[in-house]
Structure formats: structure tokens, C-alpha cells
Amino acid sequence: MKKILVAAIFMLGLLAWAAGDDTPQERYIKRYASLAVEEMHRSGVPASITLAQGLLESGAGLSRLAKEGNNHFGIKCHVGWKGKTMYHDDDARGECFRVYDSPEESFRDHSDFLRYRDRYKFLFDLETTDYKGWAYGLKKAGYATDPKYPAKLIKYIEDYNLSRFDTMTPQEASAMPAPPHKIEAPVVVRPNTAVSVPVSEEFSFSLDRRLYSLNGVPFVYAMEGETYASIAKEYHLFKREILRYNDLKGTPELQPGTIVYLAAKKNKAQEGLEKYIVEEDGEDFHAICQRFAVKEKAIRKLNGLKEPVTLHHLDELKLR
Image 1 (cartoon, rainbow, N blue to C red):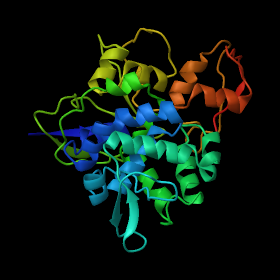
Image 2: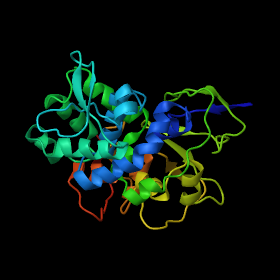
Image 3: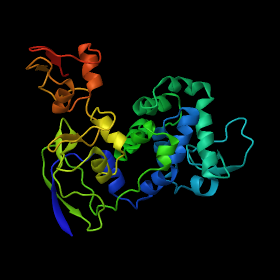
Image 4: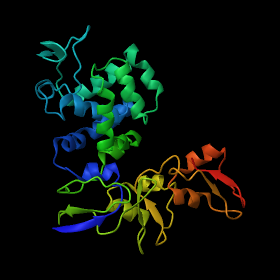
């Protein structure tokens, strides 16, 4: 056992996949993530929403409806259902619920239930990455009576970084890297604080380097001999994720000392950093965005700029 000093915000993905690896929630996510992604590409329902609803409605697969009826989403019989049924106390005593032959059938019916009912049609005008819009939209459409339903879905999505599945292909989801061994005591680290984290000797990715945070985004400084691919592997990310987080494409070289973000940058700089004055003609727009942990696309839009961005001495760049 050893103590490692960490100064950063662990991105939710690291916490979700590293911490509590043997919890029912983690087992549920690992078992059904690829199915949720497949359904997203078939029907348009975000994988994060499907997984969050499954976790909530089925108690991570442990509810009576899920275990006895393969019903992971609490879908009631409704008019026109001709399949098997079971009765369960929900909003009222002895309500009729659908029974499925397999979890896969339940996931498919859930997607179709949303896709082909008029009251949910407006949801499909939203992006699959807009999980908050979907969460509140489901409540608005009457999927659940609990006023806290959207907040509960969002908490699952953010606690377990389920939104990462919203940008995956089915092949990528099926090839997800195995999660690392668990941390004995999961800790959420706030910006600019240092805590002692007990780590198992079995812990599979390296934490014997310092993590930093800028604008609430965790990052590391590249070391000699490292590549974007090696850092991605170290933190159980895909290389393309690392590149996307850092606004990069292709196979760029990585110089020692370079900032490498481990999560998506923000759309605007932290409070107090309203603008940046360009220091010289031709200053690198990418480097500026990296310096402030902001997305290039967001800053281009904020300033009405088009690619490729050409900057001149004393130009003002809005950062928020």
C-alpha cells in the first residue's frame, strides 16, 4: 500500500471506471454499454440516457422487474401490448408491466417505445450528446412522475461519465478497454487541493505522476519518450479521445513538457479571463486555446473566426 499525492480534478471517466469496479452499477455499465450504443445508432436514443434509465429503473439490474421479467426500464403494459406480463406495485398497487425474453429485447423495446410514440417525438430533434435536454424532456413528456427524475439521470451520467458512449460506434463500444483495478477509497479531488489517495499495489494505471488542473480540466505534462497513444493507454482512454480533448488530428509528435488534457476542455475560460491580447503576428491559435483550457471551436465561434485562424499583433480574442 502506498500514498500518492494528487492535485487535480480526476475526470469523471477515471473515477467511474477506476473506482468501485465491483459495484452493481459498474457491472451493469460494462455489461450493457455496447447494447446501449447499438440501440443509439439504430434508434437515435442517446446511449447515456439508455444506461442511466436502466441503472435507475432497474436498480442496476437488481430489481424484481429486471430479474424476473427482464424489464430494465419500468415500461408498463399500456394499450396494445400483447406480450407476457407481470404485476408489480409502482405508482399504484398491482400495476401491469411488460415481460421480455431477454434484456436485449427490453433495450430494443425501450428504444422503440420512445421513438414511435408521439409525445416523445420532440426529443429526437435534440443532439444525441445533449443528455440534459433528453433528461428534462423525458420528464416533460411524462415518462416518470418523480420531479427529481431528470436530476437523477444526470447524476448517473456525470458520476459514471456515461456521455462518453454518446460518441462511440458499436465497434468502439464492443472493444472498450478493460477497466483498471479498483481504488480502495474513491476520492473526488477539487481544484488546487492536495489529498492523499490510498492506492492498491495492483492498480493498473500509473498515478505516480502529478496531475494538474486548469479551468477545471485535468492534465499532465508529457515526459520524455511519451506519445499521445501511450498517455491514452496509461489513463485507459482511446488515442482519438486524447487527440479530441486537445484539438488535434492525425499523429502529432509530442514534445516533453507539453500540456496533455485528459478530459474535454471548456467552452470558455475561467472567470476573470475575459480576453487575450495577441502578442505577435502569427501567434498560434491552438497554443492559446491550450493555455486557457478552452475548445478551439468554441473560441472561434465566440470571435466569429473561420479556419484557419490567422492572428495579428494586438488582436483581441474573447475567451468568455
